[in-house]
Image (cartoon, rainbow, N blue to C red; front, side):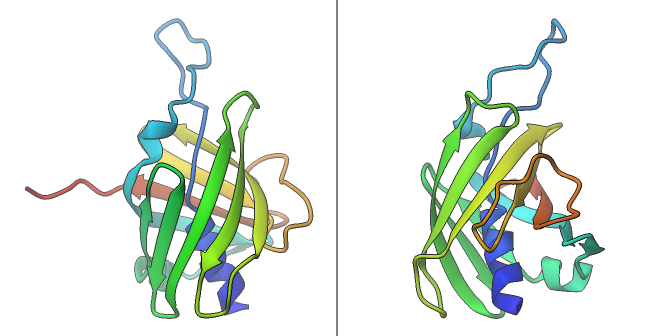
Amino acid sequence: MRFVMVAGLVAVAAWAGGADDKNGDKAKFDPAAVVGKWEIVSGIKNGEAADPKNLAKAKFEIGKDTMTLTSPDGAFKFKYKIDTTATPAKIDMEITESPFGAGMKAPGVVKMDKGGLTLAYDPMGEKRPDGFDGKKGFVFVMKKVEDKK
């Protein structure tokens, strides 16, 4: 199931509302905030913590509507869409290119707070998670990597 974990990491990818504004209200999610390079800080697979050594080997980059996960298992490319009207925001991901083919879909939810991105999704494409507890499906917490100039 290494593919599923890797796909999860990629799916990790992607984003949404949870930050509070100055008035204590939920701030409107800005999809542009997820664009950039991310590193995976922690993960949960079906209630079990993911191995931090494996997570550290992955490189994740998110574009406007695509994301790429590069890992020792190869490169995985996804297209994604975020529904920012939902709380938490919903994300729908589909693999467009991987060492194992394309077409796999994964429904999920995403949130962004304190500069971090949390993605929860069902790698089997069956049911969108209700939250971020990781009991079923995958959850990945990421932090943005600053460009060194």
